[in-house]
Structures are given as structure tokens and as C-alpha cells.
Amino acid sequence: MRTSLGLHILGATLAGRVLADDAPPSTDNPAGVVYQAILPKEPFFAGAAIEGNVKGSIMAVAEDDGNGVMFSIMFENLPAEGGPFTYHIHTDRVVDNNCTVTKTHLDPYNAGVAVPCDPSNPQSCEVGDLAGKHGKVGSDPYMMNYTDLYASTNESSMSFFGNRSFVLHYANSTRITCANFELKMMEMPGNCNSTKTPAPMHR
Ligand SMILES: *[C@@H]1O[C@H](CO)[C@@H](O)[C@H](O)[C@H]1NC(C)=O
Ligand SMILES: *[C@@H]1O[C@H](CO)[C@@H](O)[C@H](O)[C@H]1NC(C)=O
Ligand SMILES: *[C@@H]1O[C@H](CO)[C@@H](O)[C@H](O)[C@H]1NC(C)=O
Ligand SMILES: *[C@@H]1O[C@H](CO)[C@@H](O)[C@H](O)[C@H]1NC(C)=O
Ligand SMILES: *[C@@H]1O[C@H](CO)[C@@H](O)[C@H](O)[C@H]1NC(C)=O
Ligand SMILES: *[C@@H]1O[C@H](CO)[C@@H](O)[C@H](O)[C@H]1NC(C)=O
Ligand SMILES: [Cu+2]
View (spheres, rainbow, N blue to C red):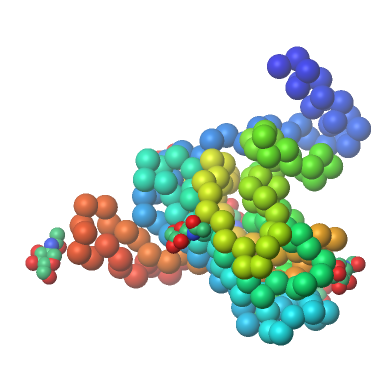
């Protein structure tokens, strides 16, 4: 406790920033609400040494008990050079396939990037630093499923990402490609027949 507080104050003094708080566990995530972000046909980075673009998507759905969000990550056709690749939830949406306009990582509790994410202490990481918390992209294809306990699909949470985007980067942080999360389907609990109904448009 003391040590951590001391470090925070020291860090804040050095960086001249607001105090970082640990991200709270994400609870109250609505059951069955699915968000998906699918990479476009063309890369953002014109110098990407690949045919077409990286193929891939991130799918996210709340755990049944509402605690945490399950992510399904899939990337393939990655550049042969420049990895391992990282990816993060960024605050703003992609417009016209421009990954620069997505701004910075989703970081509602001001973890910052000065101290790299320690995956054994994920609540101290930026909420949007998925690769930091769950691993970099070091294979092609790359498929990974995990539960993130801090990101949220509840719109009233500071860690809500359903209206945001993700960006895939080279190891040197150059942005290769990016995609917006879109609301996919609402699964109606207890109604096994029509579990999938088109979700209302979401802004
Ligand atoms: C979102 O979280 C709030 C506050 O915890 C809760 O009242 C609300 O029911 C949640 N929304 C959904 C759709 O679960
Ligand atoms: C980052 O790495 C990629 C792949 O090696 C390279 O094409 C790109 O120019 C690098 N970006 C910078 C800013 O050096
Ligand atoms: C992408 O957006 C940035 C920031 O608004 C802008 O400076 C840049 O020119 C845009 N790039 C392209 C290729 O349109
Ligand atoms: C990840 O979960 C999805 C379902 O959400 C499943 O289709 C896929 O096979 C899983 N992948 C891995 C690598 O476990
Ligand atoms: C996403 O939604 C949150 C509230 O749930 C809001 O504060 C934020 O501005 C929205 N971001 C974008 C890019 O729409
Ligand atoms: C499921 O579908 C069957 C046949 O289409 C229908 O008879 C039944 O009422 C449906 N059940 C529910 C819970 O919608
Ligand atoms: Cu990023």
C-alpha cells in the first residue's frame, strides 16, 4: 500500500500528471451483447509488406455472469518483418481507414505508457492495452481467446469500448491497420430459438 502510493506520487511528480488509479473490475456487463471489429481490405500503412491487408477481427462478448469480457482474437497474413505486433483499444473511431484519427489507447484511469504494462498486475495497465495484458502477436495465424476483467461492454462504464476501435501496430508502434467495434447481435437469454436478433444501430 505505502510503496504503491509512494510510487504513484513520485511518478505523478516526475511526469506532472494526474494520479493513476487501478482499473476497477468490469461488472454489470450485459449478457449476450456481442461487439466485433473486422479489419478492412486495405492496410492503413502504405509501406506494409503484404498482399492486401492483415486479415482478422476481434470479437468481444460479456461473460455470462457479467464479470469481464471474453475476447476472441484472430489475425493472419501478417507482415513477415516488424513483429511482434501489438494491438490496443483506441479511444476514437476510425474514419476513412485513417488509423491516426483513433488517437490514443483507452486509458480512463490514467495508467499511461511511461511504465510498460505488467501483465501480472493487469489492473495497473491501460484498460485498452490488450496486447500488454494478454500477449503480443508473434505467430501467423494468431488465434487467442481470453477474458479481460477490466474492459467493459456496459455503456455506463468508463471502460466501455463498444463505440471505439482497435489498432494493430508494428513492434516500433507504426500503425498498420485498424477497425471499429460494431454491435453485432443481442442473444436473448432463455430463448433458445431466436437467440440472435439484429441489434439496433448503435452510435
Ligand atoms: C450497466 O451498469 C450499471 C451500473 O452498474 C447497471 O445499473 C446496468 O444495469 C448495467 N447495464 C446493463 C445493460 O447491464
Ligand atoms: C516500423 O517497422 C516497419 C516494418 O519494419 C517499417 O516498415 C516502418 O517504416 C517502421 N516505422 C518507423 C517509424 O520506423
Ligand atoms: C489521417 O488523419 C490525420 C489526423 O487527422 C491527418 O493528419 C492525416 O493527413 C490523415 N491521413 C490520411 C492518409 O488521410
Ligand atoms: C475462440 O472462441 C471462439 C468462439 O468465441 C471459437 O470459435 C474459437 O475456436 C476459439 N479459438 C481458440 C483458439 O480457442
Ligand atoms: C463512447 O461512449 C462513451 C460513453 O459510454 C462516451 O463517453 C464516449 O465519448 C464515446 N466515444 C465515442 C468515440 O463515441
Ligand atoms: C421455438 O421454435 C418452435 C418451432 O419453430 C416453436 O414452436 C417454439 O414455440 C419456439 N420456442 C420459443 C421459446 O420461441
Ligand atoms: Cu495502439
